Length: 554
Image (cartoon, rainbow, N blue to C red; front, side, top):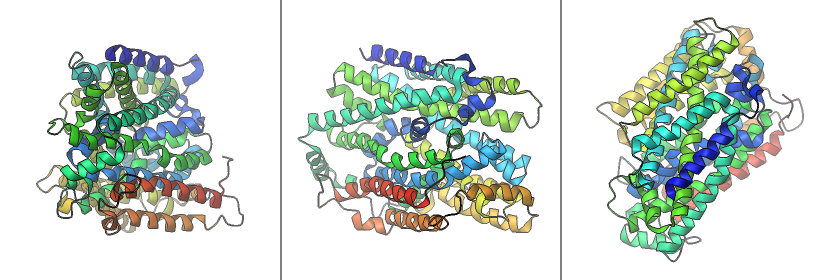
């Protein structure tokens, strides 16, 4: 029954992914950014695919099970990250439309007038995308293997799922991905809520009973450690900052920005995203319940499926596994397209002259190559799913100083951007794989970001400025509104509000709420504190949308 449901699900995905018309992907722009034509719901569901990947479906329950309350940083970070999309997304859209950009590396190469920077940014972007794509393939393999109790081995499950991905991404590009993403978003939300309800009602008398039982048996699991240098306050704060700053610096989310019909749609989806992201809490509940019900599991990333296999009827298990596959496949499809288009546009086309159709075919071939290479890497299962996700975010956040410099630091130069990116990645690698890992519990990506920013500034002031005309093009992208009352100062108000919200999520503010009692609506104080950020950020962004009143005209 489980395997049959998964096969039917894969058939539905393939049907939705196959292009409806032969003219859907005539040009490279059609294939990569859907001809800048996507509406609110397609860009929304592609955007939140970053929140609902295999890392969410398997990795977060695994961390809730293995490491406890520290995983709640994900709820806070996802909510806060929408502020970055709201702020920078429309600026990226305007620069992309005016200059005909389709990748993140093209954006940096155009602003800093440096083909070398574009190539370096493309290489770093592809590394980050491959790390994240590996995560999705590992998740797909786990889901097949565990749900079928070994009938479909890990290697075969991952292969089958991403063979389907390869077909519809090669044929239909971003439009195909958007159709599958909408289906996945609605389907997975329904399944996750249902599964969380089943787990809580099957093993406990309610949510409060689950938390009180966990508090009696393992109270340290529901609060941050005040002494642990690995998963304590420093890790919590630095992981929130890296995730908040880095999620929307991902190369495939730049493609999502470019694909929108209007910049206002980017802001509208940012307002909705934090509330939708609350479904992440459902998977954390399952991980917390597993600590009581299924202690001692070695493969912590499988706790979600292991729990469900014991209590749910086969049809519900099949739907759960289909939901998990959809999470891995939608995220993986967008990442494979972004990686292939980055290689094609930024590492091939600048050095080899080719016509539009030749470039399109090259990108389609590169999709297959990248999926094949990443599949080979995923077979080795290099680390836990959430750990791989944090490394990928650490790479992605190194683009932030360059993007901010492109819009707000006129003196920022190509050599400064290249030096900052290089030193930031080197620092990240040293504190991730070197002899000293995450010193004092601080995420290596945050250390890399600090070194990156200082290096970018120092080298920029020591090198020759870029052409004023190009700088003016990017400055124009920040001037979003026609003159009018209440519009000129919106960005200052936004930044003040954002700083207050971010400060409330970090140490020492978090220490005020780092306790179990009193229970609020049946949940520990620390859990309620973490969940509340979704509502707070949505209200804040809705208010900011009314204040700035963005134009809908391109």
